[in-house]
Image 1: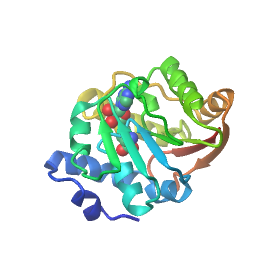
Image 2: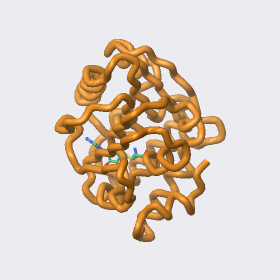
Image 3: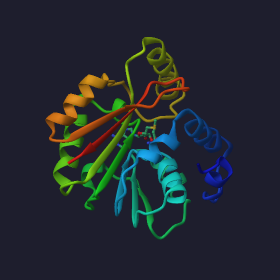
Image 4: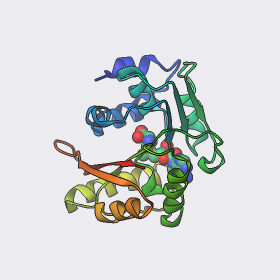
Length: 211
Ligand SMILES: C[S@@+](CC[C@H](N)C(=O)[O-])C[C@H]1O[C@@H](n2cnc3c(N)ncnc32)[C@H](O)[C@@H]1O
């Protein structure tokens, strides 16, 4: 697993606040399990990439992709991510639907819960259409069970989104594991669901979806 010092080193200049934010994302998400189960591919598009942590980890910890593109609605986070200088990596402050490029693997980690349900549906259908056969969409979201873990997450997100304004968003649009699974299957994907929350405070669920 890529250590925190190596993660930080790829950014030219991080403020104290950036470091704290990236540190918290790094230790609260089971990235090693995600990386171990992440499909291989040529081009990756990470939707809602934030500070670019996942692309940072994947490109240094398990390289193989030839091109990495991160998009996010938060201009400040994209400016931080753009400090990672690598010819194969680009970060854009652009609406996902305006992105011209396509990829053979898409990732969306802890983003959909900030996006209204009807737009979540559109994003998933749009990705399915853009993917070539055998392409992948990998989603990680927080599940609604067990109740105490869900409440820990809701408390933390309320502070981060509504009080501190650290994460862009207004309301929450959580879905249960069953709802996500049927949404993804209805869009046409074959779905493998993995509960990856053992030892973590949040009920992380990984959806590995193949076209
Ligand atoms: C909890 S953070 C996760 C960031 C990153 N995926 C990670 O795993 O570290 C949620 C991200 O979703 C982004 N976001 C929220 N609404 C979005 C939208 N409509 N389009 C793109 N990104 C969005 C936020 O700006 C934020 O960076």
